Length: 268
Image 1 (cartoon, rainbow, N blue to C red):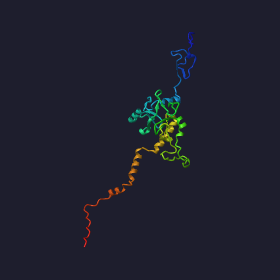
Image 2: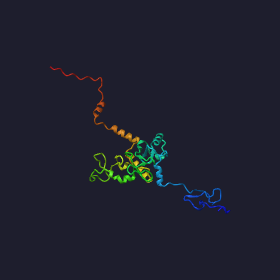
Image 3: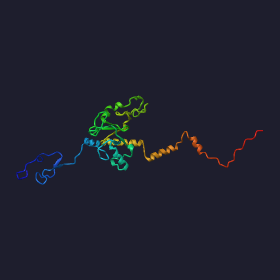
Image 4: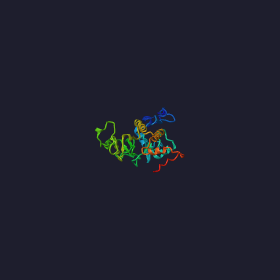
């Protein structure tokens, strides 16, 4: 191998390892004979990437530890780290959509002490890259996507007459729920499909979550202009019970120098 008859070929000379290449293509000669390096950057598959995101805070990159909160985009955060960044106004670009406490929800549920993962209360599986997790925004419970598909339809409220309800519309029930509302499999809280947030989403699921955020903010504007307009509208509307009192206050006072009324004539 070396030209002198005394070299013995090694395993690196005979077998190529997948994903590696020789640092110098000189065979067994030179200062770095048969040194192998990576052929390219290591890439994680989708499952491995989701597993890492399930256990890492999205703003501090630290290990998740309760209390944990989630945003409408489905990202997970350590509550203390998120509040600190929110108060200091140092949120990274992936969390700029969080403007206040209404934009995140504390995640409730059981944590596996050995793996440090959330556990679905129905299927008893860890929430990681192999199992998709869904957050019920109304109550903060985390359920597996498999549990929702298997038992979600059973929790739907069927105590209504479908013949009296048009397609695409919801009907108000006696208990305040609607025909398209469901009950949480864990705590029984009432929710709709709009309240479901896919946790640790893929690119397509992330787009769907963003569309939900835009729709919710369009229904409930919280800007200063919207609040000012609502306050102005409420001030212009007269109070039904206090209208007489308002008119009496606006009635001008009589002048002080006006003559007193004449006394009635004396009886004969």
